Length: 332
Ligand SMILES: NC(=O)c1ccc[n+]([C@@H]2O[C@H](COP(=O)([O-])OP(=O)(O)OC[C@H]3O[C@@H](n4cnc5c(N)ncnc54)[C@H](OP(=O)(O)O)[C@@H]3O)[C@@H](O)[C@H]2O)c1
Image (cartoon, rainbow, N blue to C red; front, side, top):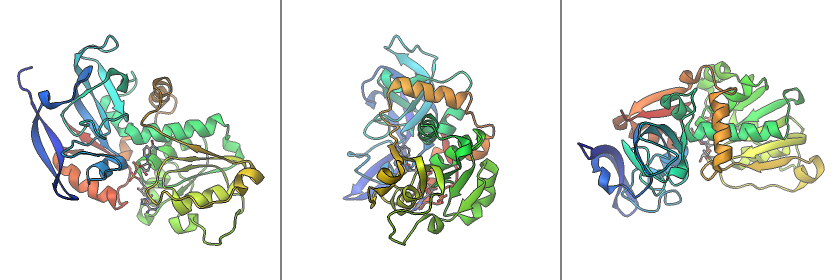
């Protein structure tokens, strides 16, 4: 390699609990040991990245740090028999961007087990339009349809609907023929949500409940929740007999004040979703679905592309719940 330096967004703790984000030149030799050296072409922005980039020690323990839990690029060096130089690969989750230098750098070095080959029917750019958010949305969809919850059983509630996970979940479920009620705090996003397939849009206030009742009228055949807290509680209390609720996020709250009645009187199931440590055989199946029968036709309409210098401002927007759709970072 002729030039060993590359650019990265570096988060530094300048004084206790005070963090800055700056683009810096780094050296490939500073990357951790690993089987694959990858030239990152695209990364993406997820809520977890926004937390890591703002000093959240629940996500990243040590700073300075390069965030970016997603990366898609081309293998430059490999000690693995599974990958060779020139292979296109996609990495989402594991420790990338948490305590391992992440996708907001033009290079990453990682264990081979973290990578999958980029599916044939996806470009690297498209893979990052999905990213962890899309992968998580697809895992949630998978849980619902395997239960099974069928389109004819009724409406599906999806919260945080304009967010990364929410917008991809709405798009996939609509493509599969389900009737979607989207929960959104953004009245201005009505057109966006309708275009991606929501049939009904309700506000966060309408989705929450302050009655204190232990069970509410049965409304949803299934729920994909991305926010937690009051909206998730009301969704569980309103899920119809035998229905399924998936739970992946906590942007609203990590709390879940609830009784056992939805479970023991209506037989509903609350299913947890984790994308970071999802086993490789499930990972590969889900990515094949995202590239194949679940591929969103208007994937490009969900995405805003930025370069490293613009990323910091968009991170602030996300932390304030103001981002709509997906953000990808072009590192070419
Ligand atoms: N378990 C996993 O493996 C996994 C993987 C990926 C993401 N996640 C989690 O899933 C959640 C969503 O991630 P994301 O990347 O989609 O984030 P995102 O793009 O920021 O989307 C979150 C959306 O939630 C809504 N929201 C924001 N603040 C809210 C509040 N206080 N109350 C209710 N709704 C609020 C907003 O949508 P509206 O304005 O439309 O309401 C926002 O766009 C995060 O908690 C993230 O950590 C978990």
